[in-house]
Length: 62
Ligand SMILES: [Zn+2]
Image (cartoon, rainbow, N blue to C red; front, side, top):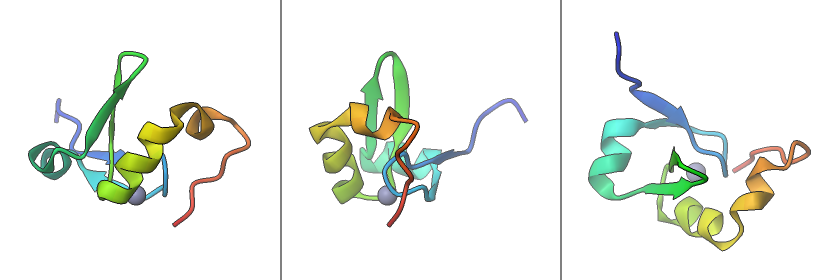
């Protein structure tokens, strides 16, 4: 397998199907990396304050 098929939602920690997220537009780019989300809510939260989710003290939760 050469293609990544799942990714972790940085907001809630859920495993996300990359293809499905891409099809649904649930992706965001930050610092040249693409992130995938389980839903619109997480994408919007990430967009509000992406840096928050890269803080090592942040623990993803639903
Ligand atoms: Zn999520």
